[in-house]
Length: 358
Image (cartoon, rainbow, N blue to C red; front, side):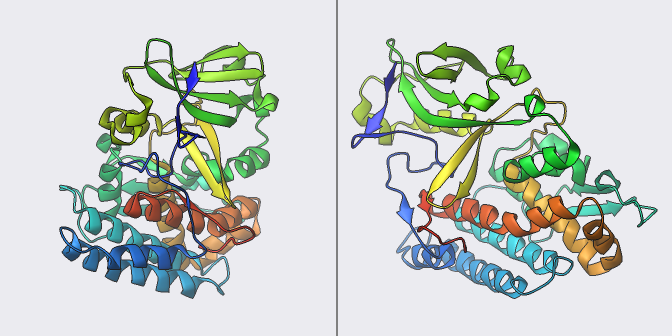
């Protein structure tokens, strides 16, 4: 198989799911707020009106983010949720998609089933997506399963499906490495087979070659095979043919293929590089919900507790769930805003070395 390259660089996955610039350069930015502001202000025609609306919400999102910086873990979820709400509005208003689910309201609600603050459990906090609002609008934007509207999910289920805190989750829950939901990958590249069909290929981290579903070649939608330099996986269904590699940037079928597989390949963005992971949908705890929607749902529930039942949130933060909730509150803002910024600009955004701010 031939690795597909553009300007002598291997073609790989992108943060943005909808129409990313597959062949674009990574834009190294120290401040995502300022870069998106620059992008929106420089829209000259066509979407200028959309850009003005989006810019208003984007600025509000930044203000809420900044107001969270010096708050305790009990208080921070409230402004962080409003940061997420306004950043999502910026995305949906800018692209102005035909989205009948989107209205300017939350679109999500929570239920507290906890009866004993001395023994709080994450499965006692539930979240439900409503029929209309920002949350179902975000779900629809990412081609999510709209059939989940009205279903209830516990914080325990939702947090288990976030790749950037998954290691925290499995360690705190005592789950063995062989049963983890996310499998770390290296060398994630688009490749072309001899018959010109395009697929995605990746090397599985050596420590995960004994994972139950890797060892049994039972991962959803991919085949596992041995190669001279390790264990690899490859997407099974290859329907896109690429006759001329030089036409990568304008190939709509390739963009559609990227969008389709991104559900299974998830990213941790940090530092200069992105870490890619394969999500094992055969895992009994896996949910078919876009990760950015899960982040929104979880932060909304924590914000409700912060606002209306801070004693309950404090009980969670003082007990056995303190580590995972602390990691979620601290790590999610960057992951969420990075994904929104990538979707607005359709660029791959890098981070200057040693800079961890948004």
